[in-house]
Image 1: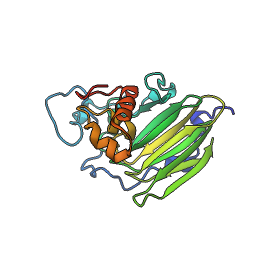
Image 2 (image 1 turned 120 degrees about the horizontal axis):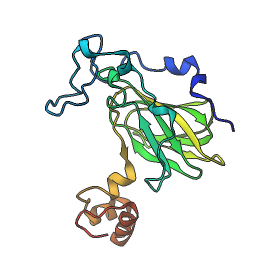
Image 3 (image 1 turned 60 degrees about the vertical axis):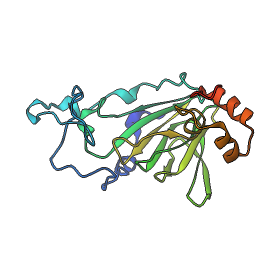
Length: 224
């Protein structure tokens, strides 16, 4: 399937950016992030003096290139419009990400603790799904031009079932949605969750826990 250029994204997708954000409302027109500050800590990033702000602070090209998919066993990569890449987004309560997934790869089950998410499939075909707080599972096959919405805090995934590379754009109603990959949080935390806890929780042996932990790169003092 041919790739859809970024310029062809429907206006409807852009309108999906929530008008009511998950992050606190801004108290000024903008707060361009001072990305060089390392001495001030609060919920967000400090603002540049408005006299130092230019148009370049409100644009970025980071989503033009595919994300690196070789650094993990799941064969996916993410590039997000963080305040470091797009300083003008600071305090706006939104973010946009490009997610690339190789053939046979997946965005593994994960959650975003601070944001709802919607994805617009740019290229390829994906099997997507999420589980709600009542353990109800919702899934759908989506292809280029389709949108899938994931409620905040739900465990969700997207698996590439295309015969080649695929990618999507993901929108969030937070400038810092957070990413908690379920398998890594469980088996590769630092320090590690005690093996007997995971063995009972997943009804597997402690040997199995250590085997999974080794595959995911975790140890945390309990051995691999």
